[in-house]
Length: 476
Image (cartoon, rainbow, N blue to C red):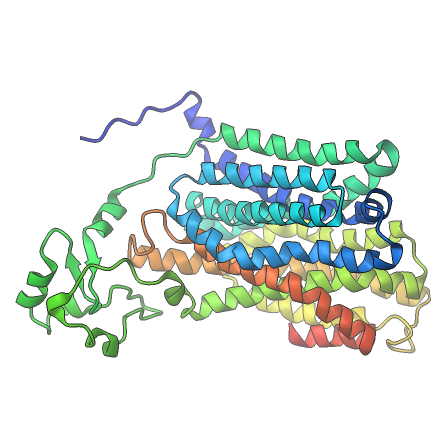
């Protein structure tokens, strides 16, 4: 007999969907906050604290910033696989935040470039895990009818971390000094961990899993009841039986059966029970999953192209200072912060295809338009007041267009996993497959973060800012 679940104090509000989603949103905010927190103070750290030669600062800066994306690309799939094997999302989130805290302290206290990079590696491992597990927690908590709306609201919160992180560090450092600056980052992580301790995970329903556990998949691709003898069942039942030949993973949109060639290579007399079908083989065979990954990578390419080329372009062409440059990034981010929940609500009602397609179409056009001001752009626009107004307005419009595309990759792969699991309960194990799914989108995102700066920077140097933007606009 199963033991009765004893509810802890404050169970109702501590296990509420609102609190869980709010905590996850703050965790993702923290990850983005920590990712960009170091950007405006890195030059000071390298030259004043680590005594790096100014001629080597640019190279080391690129290495310190790119190592985060490289680590996430390498450890992402393994992190998602491990997270789906661990039943407690809360415990996994706490461990990931602990990694972030340790990595942050190492980065702040670094006395050499090698120690600094080691700290960034630990920080990347923790941040990558927090991102994957956090999104999986949202998918576990939210119903299918409100997925896009909820992810839109969550994206509004975590996107603000990209904006607030560098603003806070860049503002506090000259006013209060080095350690007070890093103390704010450590404080954010500690608060986040305390919030994680407050939430309570509701006990999972076992009905679907128990039904799924009573079925096993043999090497010939057929379903059998686990309570019976597999060999005897295979021998006694007819090969033409509809129940036996029905694929384990069957849905209206996709046939997930094991190939007929493979099914005849194994002797039924030696059939043994196998683990469920390979997750990545199933998901990566789904066109919508591949589309989700490409969308996520495209978003990362747009972000990194702006981060890499915008500051240098506006300083060289318009003579702007750092405050004006920072305001340009604010113009891109503010529409996403305001419209995130609204566009998510629209996607829940009308679907993602039309809105996302429109968003990427407009984004491509605006990226081209962004390259027209300046000496290597269109001559009738130029670098004067007219060109500066067009440039600023284009960035604001780009923010509106990105509000239609942001989070599409996560939303699409969530729908794919949900459809597969609803058609085949327990197919990805008792804890589902969301963490592994988000490790795939996270992999594509970080691949974009890794390739984007190299591609945009090299194009801007070789063919100019205009043709760099034209190339990115055509590829979106």
